[in-house]
Length: 119
Image (tube, rainbow, N blue to C red):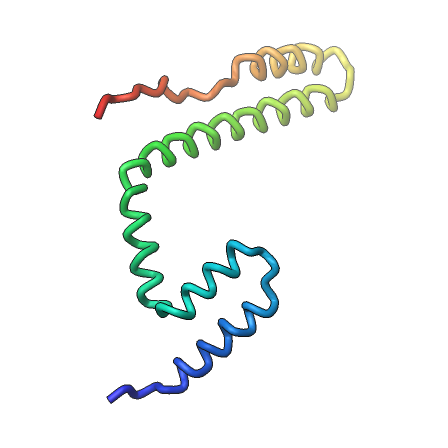
């Protein structure tokens, strides 16, 4: 015996209300199919489609790691140059300013080059 019959009733009402509010035709078609075949079957179909994308997941991780490394070092370079520009111009800080600019020129992401392997 199904213990929560109100879930089906309110789930159908929620999908119907979304159909009234959604303007995008692709999303509206998706909601109609979901309402027709059921949400559990639709989640199963989406999981089957995501299974095909699973081999590409390491490439996404590598690209994200490279992007975050480059963005982090770019921020560090900009911060180092900004500190060098904001130092008071006296004899002691002239050498520190020069050193900070030289350091900022040499700050690059230490990630190794990406090697593609053939499948």
